[in-house]
Image 1 (cartoon, rainbow, N blue to C red):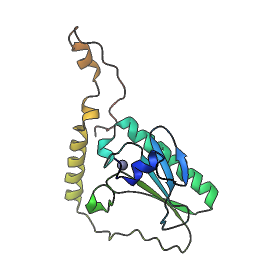
Image 2 (image 1 turned 90 degrees about the vertical axis):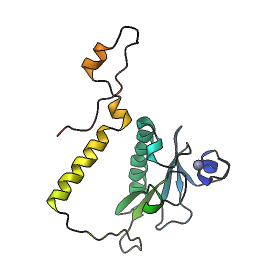
Image 3 (image 1 turned 120 degrees about the vertical axis):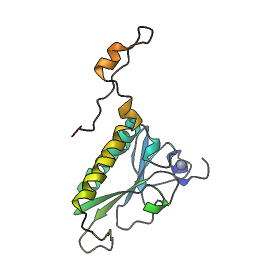
Image 4 (image 1 turned 90 degrees about the horizontal axis):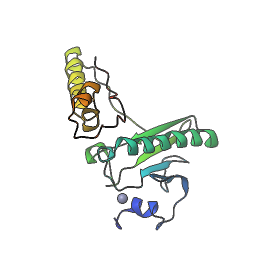
Length: 172
Ligand SMILES: [Zn+2]
């Protein structure tokens, strides 16, 4: 992806003021920050969004986010941090490489994050929550997570599946 600035930074072809790097993630200072110390966190792999990352890759990204949030909080004297992730142009995503902004917040700064809260009806909350829960249950990683009995019933030809993780969606 030679045309992608974030791939170029991840590969060291474009210089940056790095604050964190591991095998899967790079983080560097935004050269056009809303506030001093604004950091851009990106998976090194060129993906458009979180839907293209595996659970493990997603974990790597958010472990890095945690470290950097703590790092900027301790080093910059900010009073808060916004973690901003946008998926899709409609949500404000401007690059085709997934990035997360970490914005240190200071008293009387000029960063504005805003929406107009609207009162939701209970019926809508109920049906929306159900729709989202139902959808989460169909996410491949969860569906493919072996259920103990099913694994035992599998034919002897197949090697035993390794249980990597339990489904994390509570069944209300
Ligand atoms: Zn890229």
